[in-house]
Length: 78
Image (cartoon, rainbow, N blue to C red; front, top):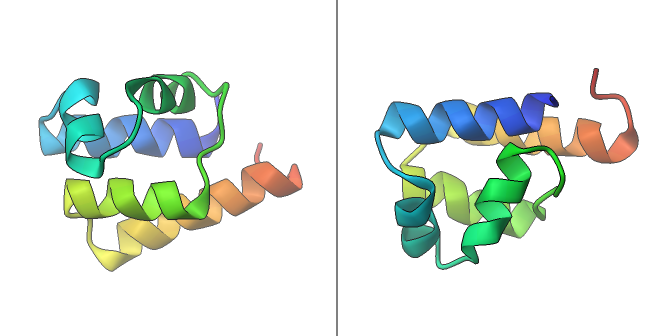
């Protein structure tokens, strides 16, 4: 499991909302959240920003998501 998928799941569950509710708030397809949390899909930076806004994440958490995405895309995520 990648850092990105772990962060997405932790931030969502810490916010106390379901994947379905998050997709509604972020106006994205429900399968995106499920697949991202299962580490089979890498959301775009735009989608991650929408998720962060929907979760009302602080800037530091938003940056952590974006950094984790960049690391996964570059193949440096361990």
